[in-house]
Length: 161
Image (cartoon, rainbow, N blue to C red; front, side, top):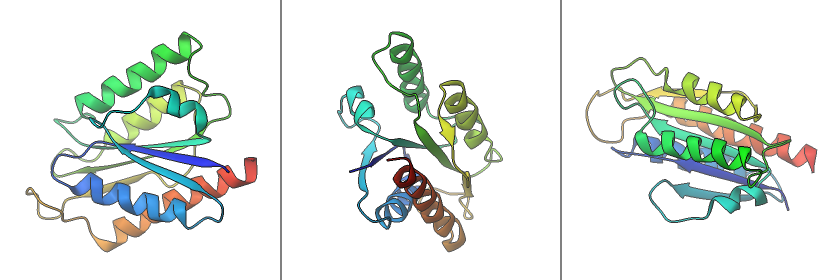
């Protein structure tokens, strides 16, 4: 059974809400296994070798991904170089939330994933916290885009099996 892994970080809950919507979209594809993992929760990097797709999500932290997501992407690169992580034919997606920094964090994640050889599937989702304050304030349109992202990645994964 094809597998999509969604790995995210969340500070205020916005990116977690988005991650759950991405997972809903991916799970809507028939015979798709979906795993949702929050950075900071212990898991083995070898899980990625069992996946057909990876979707990363991060809130914006001073104009960048969080340091946990950055460290995760650096670990992916190191393990790929050491030939311990198989990323060939891997597809993926990115999503993120922001309040003040313009939402370019998703562009940085997309560039890094492409450098790792992961083929990105659209849409790339960047959602603003409309309230500009702590709490979950992601609008319904952005959450629907998250579902579309999950579904698009899972559908492409299903075609590749």
